[in-house]
Length: 290
Image: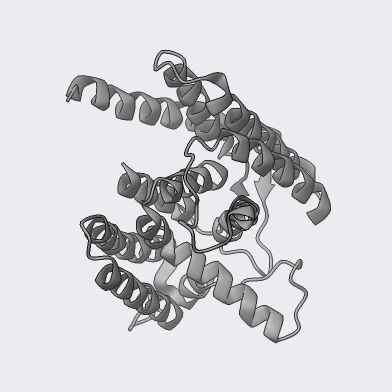
């Protein structure tokens, strides 16, 4: 194994992301692009918005830089990069001026369609659990939900980035992570693809279900996610991130167990881990921090 090459593949994007993020934050502060505290905000002071554009740019450039030399056909990566760039531009526009739900949904649909073209695995995502004719359409709908799920869960410092890191480590930002999970499922690693994002899937899906049962407007902004409760109840941004990442490390271990053939035990263990993690976040710290 070429360890210097692997180390470079890790360090170069990391350093580039850090450097570009720093420069972008300076620019965002100069133009005054901030998230202002409101009734659903988890911040007490104005916080720059739009910083995710930097790591997104590095990731897209990294994929393009690796795909060509590795001999991957353009159809395997160009549509994916096109979708990623489209969503990055949409997100930037939303950060600058705000977009309606429909104006954000249409680019998401196009991006997911492009990504499905680039899905390299010829295998079925659901491994025969669904009729073949439904496999890719249902996978596309799940990917669309995952893109929005990531947006819902990106409300606490470091949470979305930490989740992306954990899933990436387990597999070897919302849109590209969703593609990785579908690709893994299509290659037969469906249990790992289900286990690794378990917390994000549970938090977003259960919160949406609770709001639907209460008859709330599902398109309206809210602060009902488990991680939002944790921050508000005194766990704070850092405590919430540490709690979620600790749970993700356990999920990675169960995903590895599933890959070694202990699928049923891994799924049960992962479900119990996610359930405890949600309980811990909803409960908050035993002693509320000042």
